[in-house]
Image (cartoon, rainbow, N blue to C red; front, top):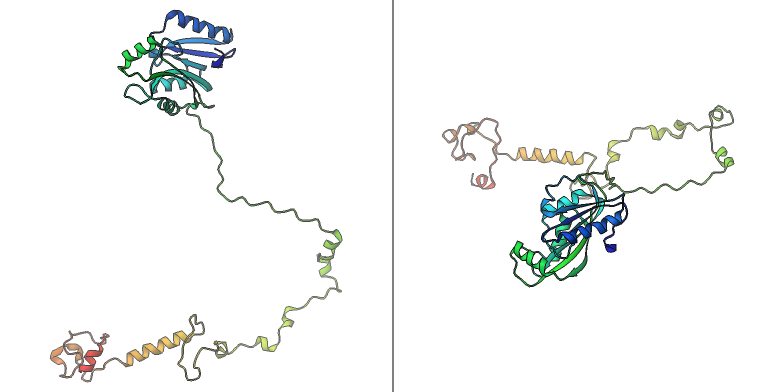
Length: 313
């Protein structure tokens, strides 16, 4: 009993299963009752009736399941969840279960048992010990599960319920921003130095204070409006035997001026009609009309002729 961690004042639930001997079960419960004392309590419950019991949530400090040597059973997920429900936050569970080296449909391995406990809400799951099954427990398990292998053993596992109620919530404060370091404390200034560089309202009215007029800093040349031609960069405009070329980021207006000149050249290069009837269609066009073969168009509509058409004409 000492290795189970029971202490005075604890409320304990002892879960048993067939074929536990009544005398052994009674002796086990009396030994636990002697440890917990008058302030504690020991409740005995059959595993098959555990889900139908009326135990309130978070009632017991410890739950011990199938610890009698002559009994063994498989703990279902519903049974483990019910044990977790009736345990107090931080409560302890100790159980014995038959396991096998290779998992089968009816009996699981020790690793699968520990995984099932974690999935049921338990933490700090630890394998405490391992032993052989008694002939009575082995016979009962084979009858219940139909397992006929010879690799069965009895493993004891302890686990704890987390220190909070099922369904409880708590606010978590997260800060993803960069923490700005606190500014260093400014060194203390000498009072005499602060006074020297401080200009009060009374000092402004003092005749001894000479203030400079900002307008007096400008001469006549600064006030004249500059000539736009002088604002152009040296490489803008005509160079020595070079064509006009605007800068990449022209801001003096040369780029717009050159664009206008290019558009004027394009207009002058357009073919002109000598008879004025070219837009009516081929029936009204001359034999050497550059628009021959083209559909009629509206007067004044821009028609672009390719170089081959102009050459043939």
